[in-house]
Length: 491
Image 1 (cartoon, helix red, strand yellow):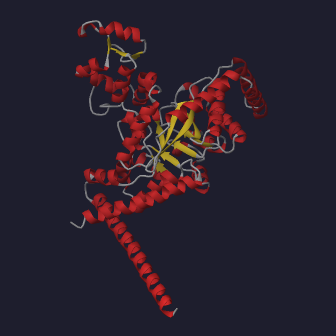
Image 2 (tube, rainbow, N blue to C red; image 1 turned 180 degrees about the vertical axis):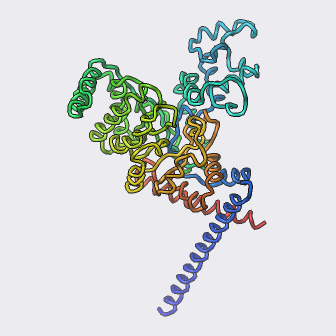
Image 3 (cartoon, rainbow, N blue to C red; image 1 turned 90 degrees about the vertical axis):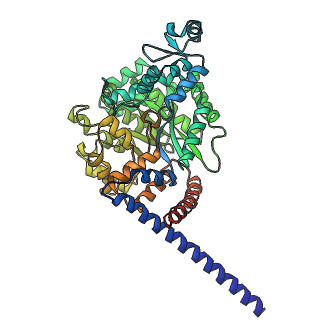
């Protein structure tokens, strides 16, 4: 018995020692990786090529502000045009969706065609480059041609390819998955499909009559909810919507990658369309575990979006009480001085939090102009509400970068944030480059960078058990990454 106890003690001691050695080695590799990143950022000229290599290899927990339609590159949309039997109008560069027209054009000599196949477009380098410049932001910043304002350029791109965006959803999601895995991203939460809607002029009249009377407004919203609940066609559309999401997602998830979806509404539509679309989005999110949240999209500086912003936030508040378990991420404050009158910059983030009940804020760019900026940051810090920071699109659409970007305020006052891509296909960008921009502009420590990677999972709209699994996996991936960096830098 005494010998058995001695052997057991020896085994335990050796196991403890081995475990301690392994933990010590992990700490050594982490410290070496931290020194390596500090060295890349400490030079007189930041080593951008080495930073790109570093962040390409580095595990990134998740991309939480991600638009499916804007993430697909123009080249893929062009291929889908041919698959559908459509063609591209040579004058407008818009998609002609009548296959009969495309068939007729194919009978003509190439020089006589006014509606082009993808092959025709690729055969003419001028037309191809022009298409890429209209369907994305390619070359916008490095050539001198006459151009529209950048915000208009950005939002107008969607009008070119939306007619094919929803026709190959599964194929598109697979492509996004492969691209994510290639840059070591394990989770995407994509703003996926516009929820169904109905126009109801009578409801809009009741809203107008309610004015600022919240009691009357809530009564009108409740009455419309009851009416829509009895609309069999509308509810069938919601069921079809959920089925489409679930069918599109089949086979996407595996041990290395997870994809979830946000249903969204368009803030540029009429009040009745926005309200009914919100009802559909909340219902869909309550019916499927794949649909993890609701969002609202569209240019905030557009006239309808500005006029109805406060009304939209009250609609969100109404549905948050009806569906308290549904998470909400809100595009709020994607505005810059000069885009709207100064008073238009003073309330979007505040109302998204205090009225709309946002669980995450998308962009949050007009922070410094909001009178309640300190209260906003205090609220977000104490309630652990992150802001989704999209450096590339913020620079392109709003012209804001560097020390003018409010991420400097969020960092200083302890507001949690995540780095994300927004519309990587339109911006011709990826999550790696968002980390490169952040590191090169703001010289963070490795500890902050690593925290940002984990934030991509911490603030995901996922069940706790699923987060735990993904975080554990991220732990293991960081151990391998830091071992690789440490070994390479010993050479």
